[in-house]
Length: 290
Image (cartoon, rainbow, N blue to C red; front, side, top):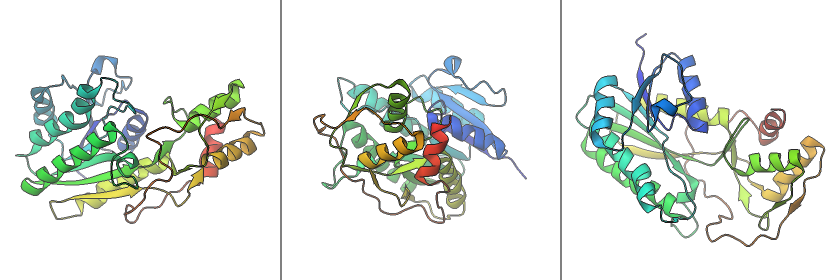
């Protein structure tokens, strides 16, 4: 069977590094496009590494050299507040992806997986941060390229991704660190609901989406949610971790509510023919045993 060339952006992040290993296991030819290939922790000699110099020509060079038929676009810059980071947010979340699409527009058929966030969708039908707004803006650009060129695309809207060895300052790693260090941890009311998806299930969903997309004969851009059926309050999450660790956490709930806080994530059109394998209890146990 012919090995497919799959180019990945954001490969050095938590989701990306897990995805790269899975792609290798499945016998893909893997290339990564990264801003600093010398600082990249992925040192497998079989990885074709290309440096993104934040210009179109470096992207075009990677595309012409590697000739991917599959692109998984994970790269993003996330910030809750703009804090004078507007240029970086636009560059990472709009310009980079636009360079990719323009570099492949005259190629043979290319399948493009874009990663979105549930932060883009709130009860007021408005993105909850400037970061989320840039992700929505890029999806409009993706609509244009799939409509006029030989590109098919899915956007996968991710919920809260978690798993072992997660270096990000996300809720579950922060709670586990508070438990291990006996540090106090202050949060808002704790009544807001979350939908947590285990890292292995997220990787499964991306691989499954690649397969679905390649069997889709239309040049369209469709959006699907990667979610579980479990919505859980933060207080209930703390209770679960307390039970698994058999240890009380020093948690208080009097932090002022954030302007950007989402009380309950909106979940609509779930990815077809995919179901998560890990319940929240199973995933948390794996995290607690790391």
